[in-house]
Image (cartoon, rainbow, N blue to C red):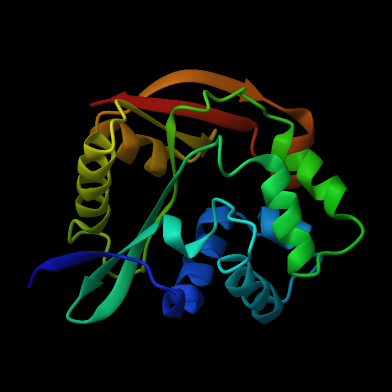
Length: 207
């Protein structure tokens, strides 16, 4: 029983949407995409996220940025890696317009950007590191990260970063086990008001 890692394809959109939503909520009742799409209907959010993975504007959510972990032919986990210089805030807004976001999109994005770290555009970012419930102890995330770091190194990267919510203890611990270190932390009142989490932690790894 071995885990297979492959690049995501457009047909993975439904699974990627599921993992993006799971990651954005991270144990909270409401995540950023609940706010952006102005609904608590999971089916509607997933439909929008599927579309977001395939927009002309290449955001960090684009399927091309994802690796998918498979076990016995079943998709069980994802990891996204992207460059901030390509997947910019403007590109994200353009893509959200493509999928028909509401007029209050700017208010939701203000929540997302209130804890801004001014990321290095030449650094590779990791996001949406998720696995299906029931596969937590089979090494899915470690295998995904190992493959991603190897690929990143071959492309010339030497530093990768990730953002994790303050209070997401399991996720923080997992990143630290992989060799990531905390480099900055920002508490944001608006973020806490909307999500009940104090803010974000910036982690980095050199490889």
